[in-house]
Amino acid sequence: YMPLSKHDLLCELKNRVWFKTLPSTEGPFKALNYSQLEPKDTLYQLHHDGFKTCAAVMNSAAILGSNLGEEIDSHDAVMRFNSAPLSEQYKADIGAKTTLRLMNSQLLANPSYNFFTDPIYRNITMIVWDPAAYTGDMQEWYENPDANFFSSYEKRRKMFPQENLYITDPRFYWELWDVLQENTEAMIHPNPPSSGFQGIAIMLSLCNQLDVYEFLPSERISVKCHYYEKWNLNPACTLGWWHDLRAEKYFVLRMNLGTKDDVTKKGKLECYTMSNTSH
Ligand code: NCC
Image (tube, rainbow, N blue to C red):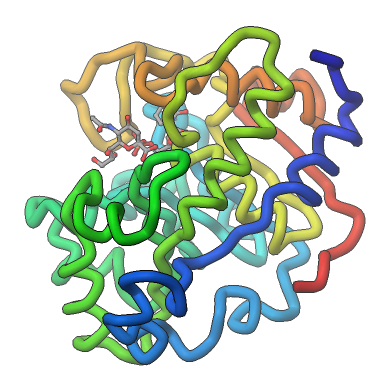
C-alpha cells in the first residue's frame, strides 16, 4: 500500500477505469440479439464532445437548505442518481436539470419506482447497473441478476427505441473497486462501489471539470438518509454498510482540488481532468 498524490489518484481513475456498457456480442447477449436492442450510439458517441463543466448530485439529505440549485444547474451536464425526484419543493437546493441518471437495477425491477411512467426517467441519458459476481460469467448473471431487471430493460428498449438507456458492463465497477482497494489501507467490502462513486468515475471520463455535491458530507450532515424521505433515518446511508462509502469518501477527499471551506459549507468536491480522453 503506497499512498498516491492527488494528481496520481485522479490519473488512476481516468486511466485504469473505463466505463463500458454491456457486451452485446458476448455470451447470452449475443444469442438474445442485444446488439439490435441496444441504443444505436454508444455513450461516448452520444456525448462525443464531452462536457466542459459537470455536476454530480448525491441523494443525501444534507443537501437540504444548501440553496445550491442554481449553481448545480449552471453546469453543462448534471448527473443524478436512482429515484432522486426533481419536485418544485427541492428546486432551490438541488436544481432541476438532469443530463444523465445512474440507477441501480432495483429501479427497473421494482414497480414501486414507476420507471415506466415517472417523467424523471424521460428525455435523458440513463445508465443502469446490477451487482454481478467479481468473476461471474455473463450467462450466470443474465440467469440470476441481483434484481430482476433484464426484462424491464428489454421492454423499455422496445417501447422507446430512440432512448439512450445503457446497461453497465460489470467489469467497469469491478475495475473501479480494484482501484479503490489498492488505494485503501484496510480491506474493503467485496461489494460493487456505490452508484455515487461509480457516477463520479463515469463523469470523469466525460467532463473537463467535475463538481460533486454532498458526497463528502457538509456541515449539514444528519442521520436523515435522502433529501426526499423525511422519516428514513439511518447514518449508514452516509457512512456506508453494503457499499464501503467510508473508503470511497476518503478516496475522493484525497483527490479533492477544491477548498476545505467548499467541503464544509457546500459539501462540494472539485476535480479537474486536464482534457477529455478520446474513446
Ligand atoms: O441511497 P442511494 O444509493 O440511492 O444514493 C445515491 C448515492 O448518493 C450517495 N449518498 C446517498 C445518501 C447519503 N446520505 N449519502 C450519500 O453519500 C451514495 O454515494 C449513493 O450511492 C446506490 O448506491 O445505488 C444506493 O441505492 C439505494 C436504493 O437502492 C435506491 O435509492 C433506490 O431506492 C440503496 N438503499 C437500499 O437498498 C435500502 C443504497 O444502499 C445505495
